[in-house]
Length: 342
Image (cartoon, rainbow, N blue to C red; front, top):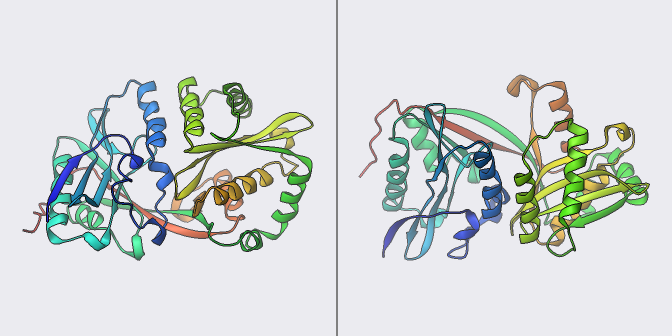
């Protein structure tokens, strides 16, 4: 049997055709690591003239994927940060059925080549598959990494629509019904005649709500291109003929992630976003996604969350689902010598 380690470029979808992982067993935020999603996040580096180098690689056993590591190395403030682009941790996908001592050693040697460079800060997210620490987490913790627990709300889309609706906060059902009745809701993706001018309308609404441009024109174009390639979609809501709310959602073949939204503040007394989010959840189910991530859950005593952040977290939790725990592990400096066992 032949074991090889190969560098890769792009994102998860570039290698998925080789040997799909058993992702249904546990939610792994796959929509955040598709090629177009990584390109969108990489745009932030381009906007700020931050140079970066792809550090991604695969470990294969006779052309079957055992490990897939996704990460980039960027030079920032006299140190090299290895992550999955700004705001996203790097990640390790793996096929537990194919892990052996030899393949594990090969993966860790690949990681060592990255973390042994000068002034490297390595940021990795462990999805706790099967409730267990990943082999990379164990290694990073053994050489001095720190750990932070994160939480997110995830809906199982393989449940029936009736069951998903039943698990929504009771008063939200009437809010959704109002929106479905009073709003004009449209889903914009590669299957619709989604125009750049419609995406610009979302951009203008976002600017009006936030009072500033939070990202560049090029990053908006990247999001628009994601919709055209089928790795994202936008849901828009009109009230009395005017755009009042819009949401951006990324998707892979397996999962969907609520990315960003904007809603008219002067209409907050009306439940203008509830039906929009419900429409997105049902669309993700329709296109075959198995998971829908509503978003981060924060807690005052753990995350020092503000009142606004706590309010957003409670709103997202109102759509039901299960609270999943992740671990973000950061290695700022390799403090302990932990040789890879031979």
